[in-house]
Every structure is written in C-alpha cells, then in structure tokens.
Image (cartoon, rainbow, N blue to C red; front, side):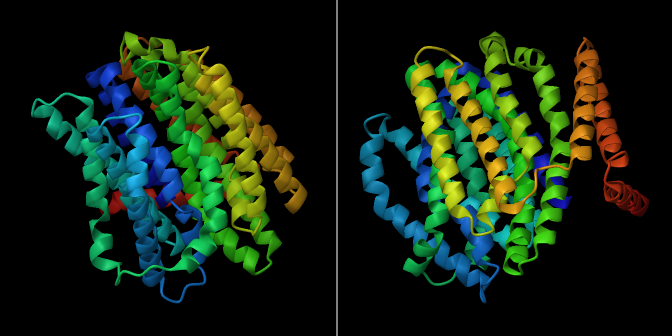
Amino acid sequence: MQSFSWHLAGAVLSFGLQFVAARLLGASEYGWANYLLGYALTISTFTYFGVQLYLPKELQVSTDQNKTLSATFWTNSLIYLAALPLIWLILGRFVNAVESVYILTIAYLTLISEMMAAFYVGIGKAGAGAFIRRFLFSLFNILIFFGMLLSGWRSGSIYLLAVIAAHMLINIPMFFRRLKFPEFRFAVLKRSLKFYLIQIVYGLYTGLSRVLQGIFGTIESVAVLSVGLLLSNIAIMMGDNFAKVVMPYFSKAWAEADWNKIQEAYYEVTRFNAYLILPVVLFVMVNASKILSLLGPEYATGVLVLNLLLFSQFFSTLVGPNGTLLSMTDKERYEIFNGTVKLALALALGFLLGPRYSWGIAFSIAGSDVLVNILKTLEVKKLFGFWPHKPKVFLFLGILTLIEIAGFLMLGKIANLVVFVLVNGLFGLLIYFLSFYFSPEAKDRATLLRAIRRFSSLLAKN
C-alpha cells in the first residue's frame, strides 16, 4: 500500500502539472513539447535494454546488488554514447539541432530514472522506488516548471527543461551511493536480451504514436492525444505499481515451484488493481467532456480520443498483471509474441486510420491493447489454469462498476466545480471502502481494517 500511495500521489501531481501546462501553454506549445517527448520515448524504448524487467529478476540471485546496478548502468550508458552519432543523424531529418538536444537528453535521463526504479523493485523496496521515481520526480517537475513560468517564460521549452531538471535531481543519490568503477559487461546484454525484445515490442508505440499524430495531423492534435494519454496514464501508473510490487514475488515463487503462491498473489493483485483503479477510470470516462472543457476550446474535440484510451485501461484493469506473470516465470517468449502482435496491429491501424481520422491513432492504441490483453488472459489460463478473477469476484466487480457509473453520472450534474470535485472525491472514498468491506474474499476486509487502524494510529501520534 505504501508503494501504491506514492504512485497515486505522483500521478495526482503529474496530472495537475500537465493539466495546468496544457491550459497555460496552449495546444500549440504543449503539443510541440509532447511531439518532442514522443521522439524521446521512442528512442528510450531502444535504449532501455530491458532494465525494467531485467533488474528485478537479476537482483534476486545477485550477491552484490550495487555492483549489478553499476554494471548495468555503465554497459547501457556506453552503448547509448556509441549510438549517439547515428541517432543524431536520423533525428536531423525530422527536427532541428536544439530539438535534438532536448530529445536525446530526456531519452538518456529517462533510462537512468527507470533503471533506479527497477533497482528498488528488485531489492524489495518498491515503496522507496515509487517515492523517488513518481512522487519526488513529479514534485520537482512542478516546482521547476512554475518557477520558470513565474519568471515570465511561457513556452513549451520550460515544460521540457523541467522534465530534464527533475530527472537529474532524483538521480543524484545513485551517482554518489550506488555506482562503482566503469565497466562494460556483455553478460548484461546477453541476459537482458529477452527482456529487451519485450520492451521494444511493448514500448515502441507509446512514443511513436505522438510522432505519428504530429505527422498525420497537426501539433494541436498531438496536444489532444497527449491529454488523452495523460488521463489514461493515471490508471497505467497505478496499475504499474501493483505489477512492480509483485515482480520479485512471482519470480521467487516460480523458483521455488510454489504454484499456490503464484495463484494467490495473482488473484490478490488483480483484485486490488480493480478495486482501486476502476473508480478512477470510470470517473474520467463519465466526466470526459467536463474535464476537457476546463482546458479550453482547443481540447473540446478530444472526448472520443480520451474515451477510446480509457476503455482500453478499463479492460486492462480487469485482467491484471498477466504480462508480469509471464515475464517473471520464464514465459518471456509468450510476451515477445504478444508484444509483436500488439505492435504490428497498432502500426497497421495507425497507418490505416491515422491519416484519415483525428481519433485514428487513439483507436490504434486502444484496439491493440484490448486484443493483446485478451490474448494474454487466454495464455495465463492455458499455462497456469486460472482466470484473472474467481466467478464470485467477477460478479462483484460487475455490480461495483454499475454502481460507480450510476453514481458518477448523477454527481456529474453538479455545476459548481469545487463542490463537484469534493463530492466525487468522497464518493470515490466510499466506493473504496465498500469494495474492500463487502469483498467476497474475507481477507480483503481484514486488509481494509488494518489500513484504517494504521491510519488512525498515525493520526493519534500527530
């Protein structure tokens, strides 16, 4: 729950920053910044070398965890440095020199930040990793962005510079505490290859979609897509928390051949994932038009784009961390296949629909995501013998979904913005309470009561 709390706090801060940036900078400047971020994310996909999956698994058998991190850092950094001239030449065909510097700097710093987050997951400190990578990063990002904004600088550049500065600040401790003498290890590349392939086929379209939207549409349309991705990414960040927490658990249980532990952990994480994330997704889906209207008329056309992206997250939330389970139990070949299918379908739909419709790229993201989640769910059933939820839990989730939709629809009629936010927030907390208290699994109620007691004791101390 500590990791989830920091992920949630970071998601709220990130949402607040981007919401304000989208409104104050305007669709043109905000779209330009996200267009460049799309290039940075695309390059990062090829330079992560699977660290987000490799480190959590490798650290379970490492005798010197800092040395493993250091070797991974230097190996990946040296390869990135060697590839820079080629990447610079390729970028020169699409953007100018200053924009290339922004892109390459953000791509490299993102690699380091993700490496540190993966390290904390691997050593069983996912909460600390979430605090640094999600909460602190978002906090620094906000402070630096508003500092430059208040100085009178109002362009997309301050958005990018704030990202760069925040990455640098959160990674300073690693350079002083964790890194050892530079060394290049081919073994790192060899053992991370399968995870590298998974990361490419799954992550490439995340950044490329913004680039394609800019090529097929306008910079303003990139802004609309980016806002949709921002709101849907709140669910992704929260779900990513559960996936990272359970990574070492799956890996250890698999090494011990304890199938019962794997099944129980999967059920519990998938259930908690649904209880905590579905209300967020449904709130945004029901109130998409109202939320986008707050950003200005330039974003009013994004309702369909936003709801397409949110629908895919609604489905992903229900099926849980099936990809994590496959990756941590030596079933990486399935994930490579799944990711290849997802990338191929996304590219096909993107190139088919992107030039014709403003929602084409969003549909390519959502459609490929839903299809591959269905595929992974069937694979988990075939390989491990269980579905994401027991029948009674699935029925309970169906009832909760209907209650949440009805509640958010009624509360969406509130005209006063402050009252709207407060009342919907209280309704969300009520849904969280009801989800755990009336859960078909008795231990969920026990989890809720423990959390309440812990919160009460913290209040008593203060």
